[in-house]
Structures are given as structure tokens and as C-alpha cells.
Length: 295
Image (cartoon, rainbow, N blue to C red; front, side, top):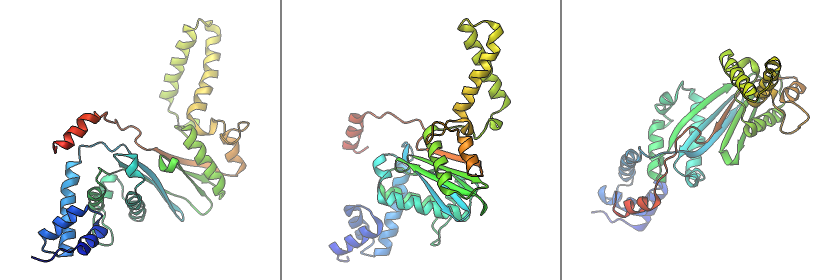
């Protein structure tokens, strides 16, 4: 049997990020062969990832990468905010952004099958990170945008990536203005760019609700229609970016601010970490007891 030195264990730990005891066990199992031990830990990591598959990853980060006339925004989830701030997790997220922007896969499923320069698929890169970091990690979503030289990207990450916004300002190269629009979107969370994007069905449904509200308030029927149209305008202000009051200037609509740049908003993507994911409420005492029992 090979002599498993502390230096060898340290070297394996630095290469893999795995725990000291796991590294020692891997070296014993592979008779001190460092490369074989790395493979052993990767295999162990895949097994560990499978055990974590039923956990809920609702924390994490958004990330934006701009390269010339292309940009990507993505969300990568972990189980805790603590891990989202982990350096290795952040390196993984940045690496995923670079690979996805280069390959431009059509879906998350296609993205997971992409391989890096070493031939390692993204799904396996994530599994290795799970083994190293110790939490479930998932690539949840991404979107790639393109522009021309006459346009500008505006990107903004709020609270270290808790909210990410990527907006395209068409017909203007004012990147600072585009970022201001992105910051507004992060703060106010509009659903649409303009009223034209709101479906006729949605407008009619809102009109019916507002009509019933006015009638229930006892308003005379002859003025209800006018009141409803006024309130419908307020509804558009709530959901349409261009109708909203600009957060950096309460005397100005976003529409007017954008027009002052000579451009127009082509579209935007806003991701908030974990939105739409049902977070499980775990019993802390039960969780600790489960770990004590080795479950």
C-alpha cells in the first residue's frame, strides 16, 4: 500500500475542494494515485448529487455577461444564500455564462448537454460542484440577447444578484441611460414594455373588474364608464414600463426619459432569485435529528 502523506491529501483537497477525510479515503481506495483519486471523488460526487436531487434550491444568484453585441442573463440556484456567496459557486456561475453565451443553446436541457474544452458536460460540471460545495445546485433559466452597434445594453444586479435585469435600448448608445432603465425595472417590476403588449383579453378582464368595483361603491352608472377608463390608466401605469413614473425623476415618465436618449426600449428580462419556486418549510429540530441518525 502506498504511503498516504498529509501533503498528498492536501494536494488532492486543493484540486477537488472535497473534505479532508473524503480525500484520504479516495487516496486509500486508489493506492495513492492522485488522478484516480480525483476520478473517485467525482464519482462519489455524482452519487452525492443524486441524493440531493429532492432538495429545494430556491436561493442562488442572477448573473449577466456582456460580450460586444451579445449578452446573457441567467439564474443559478442553490439551497442557501450562504452558498450563493461562496467563491466556488460564483466561479461556476461565471463559467456557465461564458459557455452558454458562446454556444447559445435553445433550452436549459440543451445547455446541460454542452461540453467545455476538456469535454466535461455542464450537467457534470454542476454535479462536481454539488459534491464540492455540498448543496443542490441547478441552472434554472437563461436568456440571450443581441443588439447592433447603434444600440445599448443596460444591465443591473441588485443586492449582489438577488434581482438581475437586462434591457436593450434600441437606437441609442447611451449605456448609462440604459442602466438607469434597468435599475428602474429592478425596483418597480413592470410586466410589459408598453400598452401594445397587453392582450385585449387582459384589458377586458381588468375593465370588468374595475366596473364591478365602481358599481359596488355605489357610483352612478352614467359616470362608471368614465371612471373605469381613468382607473384603467392607473392599471397600465402599474404594469407597463413606459407608462410608469421614472424612479430617478418623479416628474418624468419612463417614456419621456427614454425618448430623451433618442432611443426606444426593445425589450427587457427581469429575474428575481427563487421567484415562483415553492420553498419548503423544514422543521429544524427534525432536520438535526435526521442528520444525527445518519439519514
